[in-house]
Length: 214
Image (tube, rainbow, N blue to C red):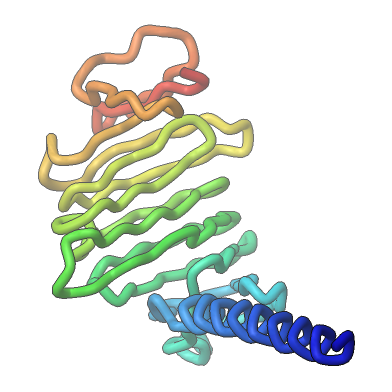
């Protein structure tokens, strides 16, 4: 009798473990599906994958095309060195370019051409990035997080600068009025207002800003 109970217990444990492995495999399969690819790479470019492996390329201008086509995945952290520049195109048609000394994490990217619940979230912690919005921004929820504010993108071409001291400058290059800047509590900020409170940084040439520390 005890032997039968032991065998039944082991069988149940095996089923639980098998189910856990199946869920884990599905999660890994999702994470391993590329969300985009590198289209420009100049100078020192580093990609840290979710698996904690690091792919590093040191490229001169005449070899910039050597890494074109390399995939990027959800959770990757992309970085550029002092002489680095990086361009990535995503599956929904969106893209961004990173300047030198920049760092960005690709936190989330969900895209289905037939769905309306698409979403992406990128975290720019240092450097300058220029985005071109794709299908996710038009049919879902595309956001860019910075140390002081979260920007919701709606069919615009935003330009974001995060300085070494943590200050942020933000502007849009086209289609004024279709983007949103949110503070860390998720409250929309009126981008058209002229910033007067301490902590604001404003680009005089483009006339837009975000609030630091709000």
